Length: 242
Image 1 (tube, rainbow, N blue to C red):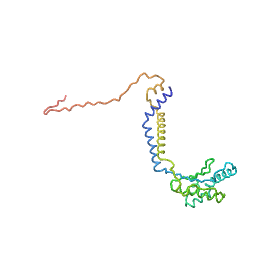
Image 2: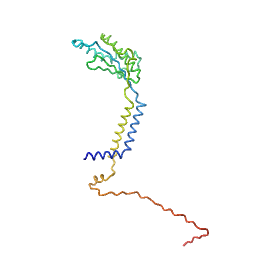
Image 3: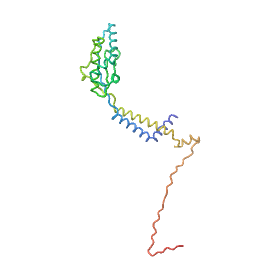
């Protein structure tokens, strides 16, 4: 019963503060729209794949351990300064090593011979160029430094790499609507909590601890003015004093 009363009171507060909730929701949603269109740049992800080793032989423990070692070495080398400096020189990239490293993500699923090189950039063509360059340079450096021959990248050129957009402006706007609605309700509850005025009979009962026997509706007084018709004096009529 108490939960039902609390729910009714909550809905009544929402009804009374509907303007506050609506204004707050529209304000936050407008900020989300402006930020999504003018300030938040779209991001793109390009993925290159490196295949490591030949098909595994279930009966060869040595080959399996060798493959694990190569995979671990490849993952470490891809984001090393050796590869990143070579990529910067090849693409004439002006990013620092730290900025370039933050744009690269390397993944290798368990029991998989495929390494995923994911590049996140604001330009789709640039992300494809960088993904292909990182994959190609990584294979060359692994061959030179570790003498690993069983390596190859999947893409024949950067045009073979697929790109997908990360993030959706509509999703950001939807989040802005939900955040605005939540903040509007919170602000309404706060205003209701800080409002010490008496709203209805239940507030009187809680404040005085006495039951309410009746209510009187007081209307505002209205002023009525009586207009008198003008008194027209006939020609020749005299007004007497006294």
